[in-house]
Length: 172
Image (tube, helix red, strand yellow):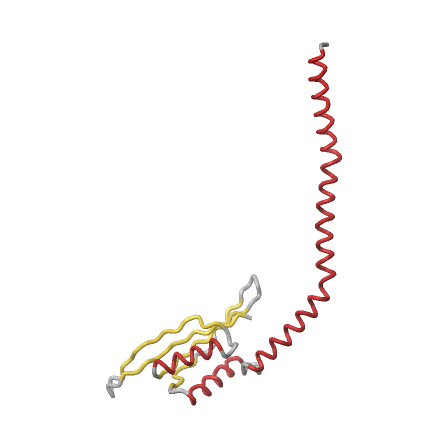
């Protein structure tokens, strides 16, 4: 056998030894190292759970205080919305024309309930915009999905008036 052939056999042998060493030794070491890293991260998460629990309890107290400050108390959100609308209507120039029964939808996957409140107000544009702004900024009832202004006419009297249909949605 010539020197060149010996070198080729040596290189092939070396590559074969490296492949076998990686396959049966290094690959398992890398897999175990990856699993150890994953378990250490989970351990850190579990160790920080009590701290997160305290932080969440504090946040819950803060949110309860915000809800109390924004006049969202009691069990019936529908009654609270009506109470706020009545209070605002005494300050502004609008009337509550219609307040329909809330529509509830329960998502089967996430088990979250979506409640949609549909109500109609009548008044001048400035008062109605003021109400929409107050519901969005000053109260925590939910998200305003839709505001639809419609100009109508009473054919008996010939008077024109503005109505505003509002859809307010709360996910809980």
